[in-house]
Image 1 (cartoon, rainbow, N blue to C red):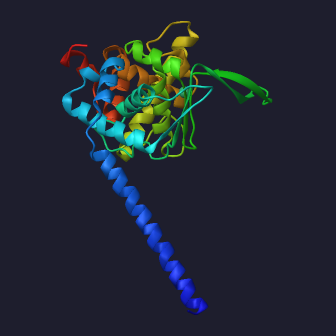
Image 2 (image 1 turned 180 degrees about the vertical axis):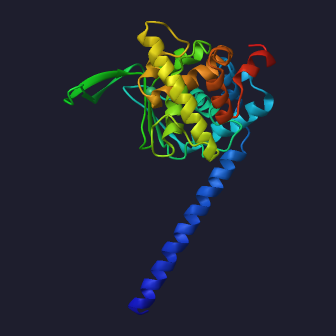
Image 3 (image 1 turned 120 degrees about the vertical axis):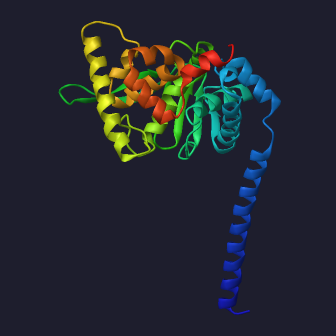
Length: 279
Ligand SMILES: [Zn+2]
């Protein structure tokens, strides 16, 4: 066999191996998706996620499919000695996938790793003061969303968010809303919308509501929307997403235009879930 023949034989073998590997991966994925939703996982949802029994059956089924995909495609990493178990995987996946229901989605295609700490974690962050001086400081964090395929969560905060699903605070909804915001490459408080017109209306209503929150807080008054939302437009979108899912009736009454924008974006109306089934 000449050197040229050997080269082409090796090349053909490499291509064949690559195609076989791709085919095997797709086959494994299809097999995993075709499995019935594990009964232990369904029990975890019923036990830990108060919103789950209230969802219409069609959305429960869709959520289960999203959870299977999420757990198959993302890697959970326990930090500071935390052992990752099914409760951690299923509950985080479920709350994350709540934001994907009933609409076209790439299912957090860029997200690869979920790092979970047992409790609040510290991280070095750069801070710039009003004179432009940049310094390093250590921050205590409940969660973080990165554009490089990572999300970081504190498990005790996740548990608190699940235990009280009506207080408008939920770190998983918050961090995954950031992921949606970051899908277009810019964390600016506007996720990928469905039409060009939608961006104009979104920008107008969100900036009005953001300015209104800042003025309310400046006057020393409280708001349904947590003060952290006044940090910047990206935080505002993450914070109002928490309120939209956990306190929909209050948001609908006090911030109807904002509620309408979020309802159109998420293709969901969580206020309807309150009366459809008993908690
Ligand atoms: Zn945030």
